[in-house]
Image (cartoon, rainbow, N blue to C red):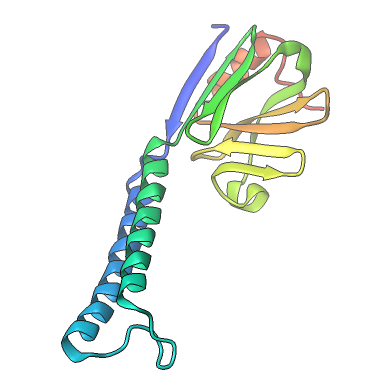
Amino acid sequence: MNTFQESQNARKPWFIAIPIVLWIVFMIFMLIDLSQYINLGEPLGDKGEELPLWLFIAIMVFLSLVFGFMLFVILRLELSVSVSKSGIFYQMPPLKKAETFLPAEIEYAWIRKYYPLKEYGGYGWRSLMRNKAYNVSGRWGIQIILKNKRRVLLGVHDHEQAARVLESIGFNKKP
């Protein structure tokens, strides 16, 4: 039991529902405006600042692509964490390529409870100066302090197993 591996993804129903609902609401309002323009001759936009039809449609297409991209990122977002004697490995495609912290680079590593909204402003890939957090859900993580004083928090669900593995390889100590 000298290794720990875990993968988390953001494929939660409400993560998927939010961009879809926002897109539907956006499209309803845009289609109502378009319908009033076609059927009633009302201008697109405010009076005196009317939008040409081609620009209105371009905005609809562009924002639909933005919502589609948001959904794509949410469906692809996955945090993989692995802890072994050879180091702590993590990746978070499509946002972050794989990275490994070798034992020689790590000053401290331990399991801690954290508050994602309060401490980092939410989930995902968060960066505050020399502090970084990679999390998808939950409130437990592996806090790593490197010898160059950089701090990284990796979210994990099975914190008890991660703590046992960190301890077995000589970590799980706070500064």
